[in-house]
Figure 1: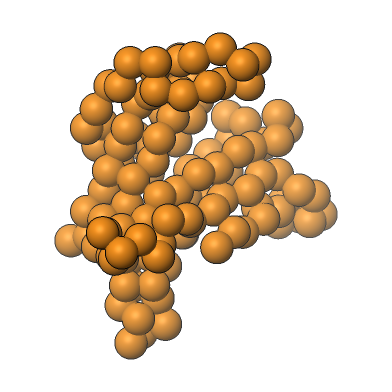
Figure 2 (figure 1 turned 30 degrees about the horizontal axis):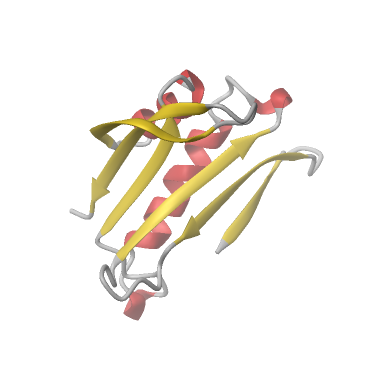
Length: 120
């Protein structure tokens, strides 16, 4: 499930937030959040606000129109301070530092910072 983040005043694209891995058989009420922000949107709290909105929708029970998730996670490159700040500002807790966890934009391996947030 993906959402576009738009500027309230002129509808310009500011970013993107997605909730994925929501159909895993081994973790049926989990989900992972990913996001990116246009350079013009960085440092304004736009992505953090969008992630908080997605979290609220994800944790709302299905009977109330939400997705009924009970656990969410975010993975970020260890060296990506901005992405890590969004996760922390949205209330996620750092639960792991994984070495050589994944490729970053320049094709090199970076460590991963993994965060989680539990409903309630």
